[in-house]
Length: 316
Image (cartoon, rainbow, N blue to C red; front, side):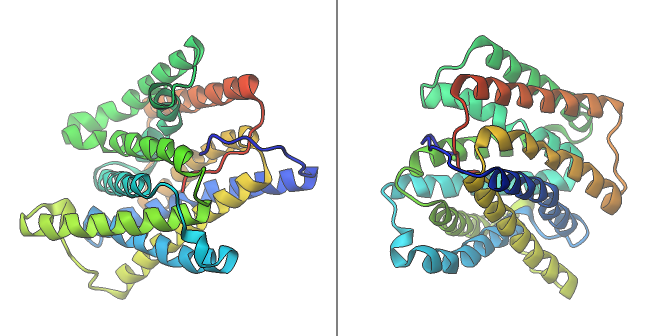
C-alpha cells in the first residue's frame, strides 16, 4: 500500500479487468499456503526453510522483470534502510504463517491472518498519524474479537503456537506501513526484489543459527523427494505470480474498489482446506470469519467515503 493519490483515466473495461485480476489472484494465492502446509507436515520441512525458498524465488523471478521494464536503474531506492527492515518483517511474517500451518487448519490460519487490514488501519494512526474515527476503531476491535473466536479452540490444544497467524498479520501490517513510505522512491517491482532477497538472506542466517541450536522451526531438512522439490518450487512461483497480479490489478483499478475482493481469499482457503486436508470450520469459526470479513469491509467502506478512490499499490 502507498500513500500517494493518483487521478484515474481508466475506461470501464480496464476497471473490470482489474477487478477480474484481483478476484483471480485472491482465489488462487491460498495455493501457496496449501503447498506450504504440505511441506511442513507431510514432507517435514521447517517453516523457515519454506519461507526462505519462497522469498528467494520471489526475488529471482521478479529481478529480470525489473531489468526488462526499467533497466538497471529500476532497483534504485531512496530508502535502503527501510527496505532492509521491510525484508526482515516479511521474513518474520512468512515463517510465522508457515509455522502456524503446521498446527492449524488452512482456513483458520488464513482467517486470522486477514485481520491484517484492520491492523494496518490501527498502525496508520499510530505511526503515520492518520486520523481514524471511532467507528473504524470499533471495527478493528470487533475484528479482533472474530480472530479470538477462531483462535480459542486451537489455543486450548496448541497454546501460544495458535497465535502465530496473528503474529504474521502484525509483521505484515508493519511491512505494509513501511511500504507506504518506501513506495515514494522505489517501484513496486523493485520493492518485491529487495524484500525477497533481504527476507531470504535473513531466514538463511537465522536457520544457520537455529539448526545448530536444534530449533525445529529453523532447521535444515532439504527435500528428499521430487514431490517435495516440486512443491517448494510451486510455492515460490504461486506466491510471486499472485503478488505480481495484485500489482497489475491495483494499477488498473482504484484500491477502494478492489479491496473488498481480497476477502475472496478466505472462501478459496476454505475450499482448498476441504479438498486437500478434509478440514471444514465449525459453526463458531464461521461466525468468527464473518465478523472479521464484516469488520474489514466496514473499514474499507469508511475509507472510501472519507478519502474517495485512490490508487494504492498492493502488498509486495
